[in-house]
Length: 355
Image 1 (cartoon, rainbow, N blue to C red):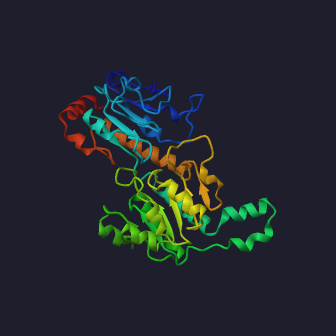
Image 2: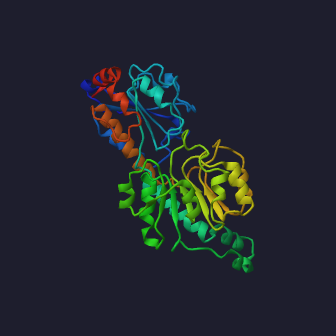
Image 3: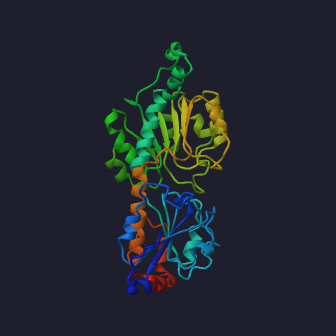
């Protein structure tokens, strides 16, 4: 997908953006309806270069001659950026970056940014959908019809969102969008555990900031919306799960590893909590059923519960606008390593590679 309408002047100075191979199907066509590439195509001097082979970690040779790359699922390590004389920017097509060595990017004078904000509405809507599905026990009621057990319906009486308490672990964009969507359901005041949240912001959203223990004890729906890092790995473990109410539900659309999966399986199997909805898992992806699949009180998705045509459009627009910003000498939004802008090596490269 190369831009063919470049003038001789632009051919001398262009900005090549590579896309990892998982953007494309076996026929070389985009897998998704709209990933925002029109933003790049409208900018003179921009070139879109598909990678031919997918690697779990991008190879340095795949970035030869590239000024930038947009990563779908592929990660980045120090070898990826080992030859970065022309490489200026990397962007995640999404918000998670636990498989990107940000320090290596900085040391290689490469700015790394994400599409923060582009996923907020879709993930919030999916979270609310799962809350309703869990509370009303949609999965079990569906199975009663499919298995001809209509008379067992009284065993699966659900709960409403009305008067219940929503607790979010992490109060960034997705948590805030979820709280906004829940305002029409007549719920109690929402809770949030987020050591980094400005209390003024929490007050603006009508959210009470509490400790993790208090959130686990008081919430009817515990929903995880924080990144996976050294501070959040196994943040919700056996002790925290034991604090939950018997009628409470846990939802994880963030990252596998934030919740101790062994502990969660045990409390779900024992009926110690009412249920869970899980979109993310340790060791994903996998080609065999996850062990929680045998449980009737869980809803599952393959890290895809929030995937919509709209989310791809919004993510793509955000990332591609960020690439145009870099190419034109402007700082993009959602930069993860802003200290790179103070590095002389980056500044020299940026001046040389701007359109």
